[in-house]
Length: 121
Picture 1 (cartoon, rainbow, N blue to C red):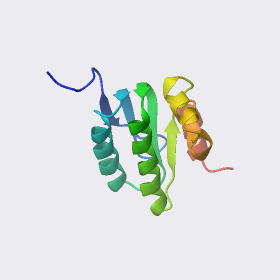
Picture 2: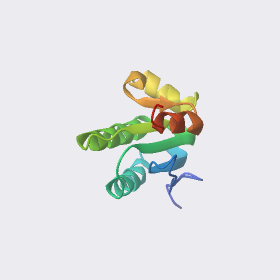
Picture 3: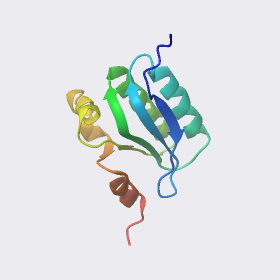
Picture 4: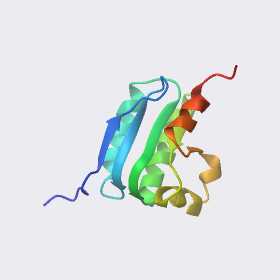
């Protein structure tokens, strides 16, 4: 028996030329270490803005929020930005409950996030 929730996975998913990951399933205390490892590797191997797509996340707890805050801090040390795609729903609600939604670059869709990556003309 494994402690891995069905369907949890992280895959590379660049957006509009920016590196990123797509997260699926539940992000909780049992999956947070795998998310941390995946984010660390993807961030280390990239440059510029970074996108974390949580559109397919069914559940996000405080350990998952901590992983994303840590990734934001790691990127911030290199003056890089973390864009989080998180449509309204349970995952977005966690950011709101934690009182940090306004501190993060949250987008409702991949299209909105991609538009923010385009230089203003």
